[in-house]
Length: 428
Ligand code: PMP
Image 1 (cartoon, rainbow, N blue to C red):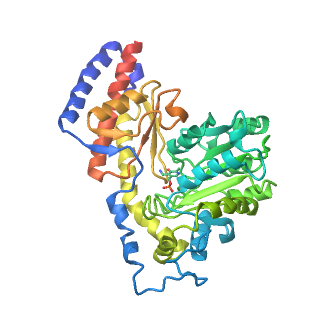
Image 2 (image 1 turned 30 degrees about the horizontal axis):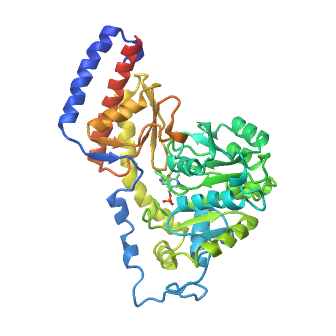
């Protein structure tokens, strides 16, 4: 297909009126689709329905140490849940605390504790004049929302195909003691689906922070969320790498079963060093008498072990793969060669990241909305909602049916073309 950038003004004008017609035809269909968040579809949620009946009134509801899961007790999680999520996180069960239903909540608590009480004896961050976090971009809006909420200054770090730009990370972390953390999604990142290379993970582990209370906020949200059986990313285990590099306390690793069982009703965990775990447990002891052990038991009895989780994730993949492939195919077919956008074909995770020409993303998302397809707001993938290029758009293919998704993806490409033509005409 001919690149839009090589077209004359007249060609662009003609194209514009054709695209306007195509767009108006879509509008007339009265679509109503919400693709704004990475939610599993109903069909995916149905995969875990057996969990609803797995604990019955006739069952023994005690965990392996004999504690009755119906009652108070066990602050840091039942042993079998620690085993299961430990295996998912690739750490030993004794390096884990099982929390409640949301890993984001654990991340919030972790930042909040550092703000009020510091980290292993450091000055509470809230008492410092300035606290900064590095934010690989594009990234996850909810991470940025937490740091913004606490008044932490966020610094954009561009992503590469191997992970965050490590030259910049090393520079900021080693030179500025106000830099206290970095948000990382090491595997199938949100939104690009990029997995960190071994070199990136090793450079993270070997950082020499100016602040001794600097921490990696390592959000392992998509550790087992592969789309393919025969082409899966493997990321080096960060706790072990940090230990080897002499930085054993530098990382908090988060995980949850949100996109494995039920989002909002799964179980979450943190994995970290013994020193950090002890500090966290002191606070946890004040915060709660214990999390929902029946839900922990439900998850363990349903999945049994890590093989059970992998088998379950293959069922998710069978539903998700055709959706991801449909979007990629439509992007290739409609936009390939036009030089008005680029995208990454992910091997796992929940999103496809699209980059339009500079200055077009907001207008594209607005156009899609006007025709009935709600996407994640443009800018959401950047701290403060400000994409300096106004170009990144997060596509979430999981929730709609395959037919709806194809329609939405086609409409999206029409919006991309139309907005790009308008931009090029402006510049002509
Ligand atoms: N981290 C990332 C990177 C995510 O994409 C999501 C879900 N969109 C979460 C965390 C939320 O996890 P939870 O439901 O465990 O709070």
